[in-house]
Length: 287
Image (cartoon, rainbow, N blue to C red; front, side, top):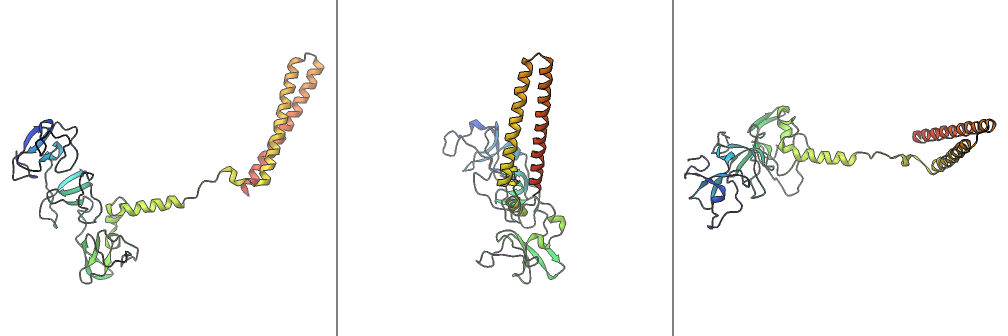
């Protein structure tokens, strides 16, 4: 069959395990020539017998067709949800010049890639506060200082990222956020904003105050006071336990009455200790 990804030759549908390697040996690792993904679980492959190195398409790419025209590229582009960049280096986005491996349009023969979000970026844009129009370029390094800023908002910009350059005065530049309308920049997951958002989240994370623990609120004096109260409380509880034990061993009514009075007294003292401890904790937390 003919396929637009390889119009010069006819492709044949074969079982993957029957495909030989380029040197004639049995191929153990096979990758799709279009999306570069490893074809481990694919049973069938579209294969070209005439190409060397070998040309193979997995089944998803066999149904993929280039249908999108971009004004800055001569060939039609095909939509990919993901390509494998671990096998070989692929070109960055032709518009924003950042990594381009998910949700992209691609001409794999030219290794030309552009994010789906960047495809609709205007190639030229007018800005109210500047007389001349701006043109989209994928990068611009004016000098070797390493410090680059947007001439509109004066914020720092990435040296190797896409930007807009004045057609009449090339030294006047703007990053995307400077000249584009909010309809392009409000979406936080735009490819050219991912690094900025990641750095912002990391900065916020570092700036977040740590939640103080209870121990941080206690000074040395308060710690000693609370220790003393707990000690007294423990003694009162111990007395209650001893009195209950004696009560179980006594049967005389008078002795039972005396034991109950002791329990009530110890219980009252324990309640006082708990109230003091609660008040001390509240005062310490407030201070």
